[in-house]
Length: 253
Ligand SMILES: *[C@@H]1O[C@H](CO)[C@@H](O)[C@H](O)[C@H]1NC(C)=O
Image (tube, rainbow, N blue to C red; front, side):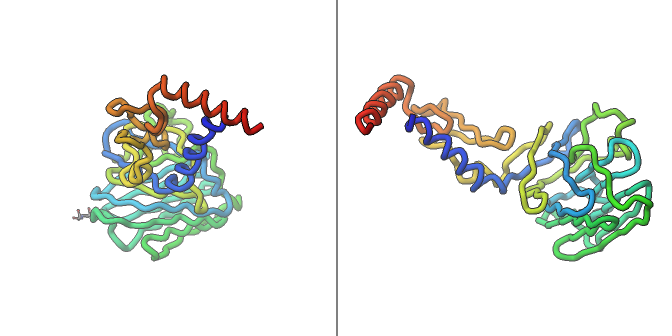
C-alpha cells in the first residue's frame, strides 16, 4: 500500500504549493467565460486579483441575485476600471482615476462592507455606497469572469445587458476570496496557466505539462514512463516493484 500513497502526497503538495498562482488567459473570443463558486459578499468580504489587458472596454467580473435587483459588475470602460453594484434596487458606479489598458500588471481588490463597496486599484481606493431599505446584498449566482455563458436565460440576469458586453482580453491571475483561492467550477475558451501550475513542471522524465480544470496534467506519451507525473516505469516494471515492496512490508510486520 505504501507504494501507492506517494503520488497522492505529491499531488496534495502540488495543489497547496502551486495552486495559488493559477493564471487564466482570455482571448476575447466569442463564448468565453470562467465560472467560480459563488462569492459570499452579502455583508463583508474581500475579493482580489491581478490582471493585465490592452482593451479599453470589456467585462471583467459579474454576479447577481438571479434576476431581481442586486448585482455587481466590474468592467474596463474607456481604459478605466469601473465598478457598478446594486443592492435592493439602489445602484451606484465607481470609476478609477487611472487607466489600466496599458498591458502591464495591475492589482484590484473589491471590499464589500454592508452597503458600501470599495474598489482598490494598485493601492488607491475609491468607494461607493447605496442607501436602500435592505442592509445586505443578495447573491445567488456563481461568479463569472471574462464573460457569461450565452445559454443563461435573460430572465435570471439582473443586468441582461451583461451578455452583450465586449469580452475580456488579457490575463487574470491570483483570484482570491478573502485570501483563499476560490473553486473554479468550469470554463470555456479560457487558457489556463500562463505562469502557474506548470511553471515548476511537476511532470518528470521529460513529460509535458498542461492544466486541466485547474490541475496539472502530464503527457507521458513521448517518454518511457507512465503515471500521473511520468514518474513510474512501464506497467510490467510497476507490478514487479509493487510485489517486492509488499514483500518488504510483510516482512516488517
Ligand atoms: C486606453 O483607452 C483609452 C480610451 O479608450 C484610449 O484613448 C487609449 O489610447 C488606450 N491606451 C492604450 C495604451 O491602448
